[in-house]
Image (cartoon, rainbow, N blue to C red; front, side, top):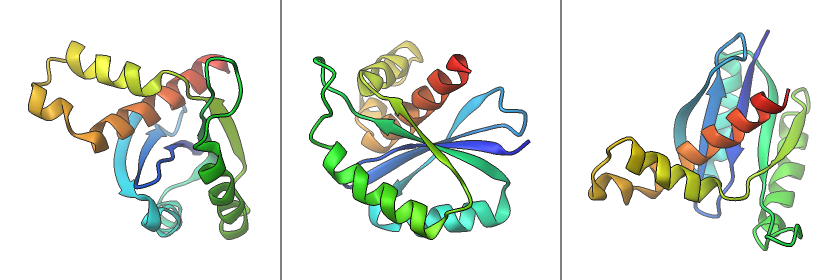
Length: 136
């Protein structure tokens, strides 16, 4: 079995989470500058067996796509062109940033640590990945 890699795509930064090889546990991996994302993913899959990409699908409360979907679609096209051997699935990412922030509070992180937007993105990617795992 290969790992599943989740992407919480952002205009400036992108959170990345990954499963273990048995696809049981989702863990935050890192946050990457979005402009370096494709090269990061190529490098990562050259070292690790990744069998699926999960990409967050931002939705509004009325179930319409959010504005950031317009940024994600070109990235998905490029990803499928650059790394065609790995399929991808989309997962609703509503409330993941709020859940990530609450997770930081519940985890006892100090206010200064909670202001780290990169950490929020990484935790959001982990929440997206965990919700995918629960749905399977």
